[in-house]
Image (cartoon, rainbow over all chains, first blue to last red; front, side, top):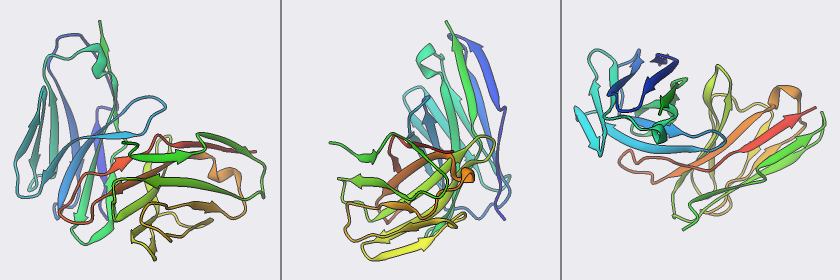
Length: 114
Length: 113
């Protein structure tokens, strides 16, 4: 059974720092991995999607990497800003045609202190 | 461009009552799904649909029904509400092919007394 974990559960950093959020999954047979952002009282916003054949994806100050063999993904946030404060979740999709196999991690709550 | 719209945003029910959570998307997405989010449990899939007339169960389907009569709408029905169904419910949609990113609604916060 696929299990997704995220470490740390919570993180507080001063503004301007670079930071890394971690996501681990137990079954390396994934189709893709997504990173989401969730603001309090809101739904999830997709940040980056990495296909299983890719190693990384970049969007602005965000860079996500994927190492299928070790079951790990990292989300790197450069020059953090208070507006980055949110909960970040990763989700893995196990098979292209098995749409019920999207498994979410519990999330990392990020606070960026001005 | 509305994206995924969920109604209501908040609801309080008494045990045993029934209700329908509405979800609509205007992006012509084939795939739609319902999740519940609980503290410490993350998001868990309740039901999903890969197109009009096609639905299937996710991880936690008991106590919930769905139907998909149109591409746009995917309502979630609570048949007889129980306190264990107190949660935040999210609807999501995406294109069916190529592992497309999911788009989420803002959620419905449901309390069962």
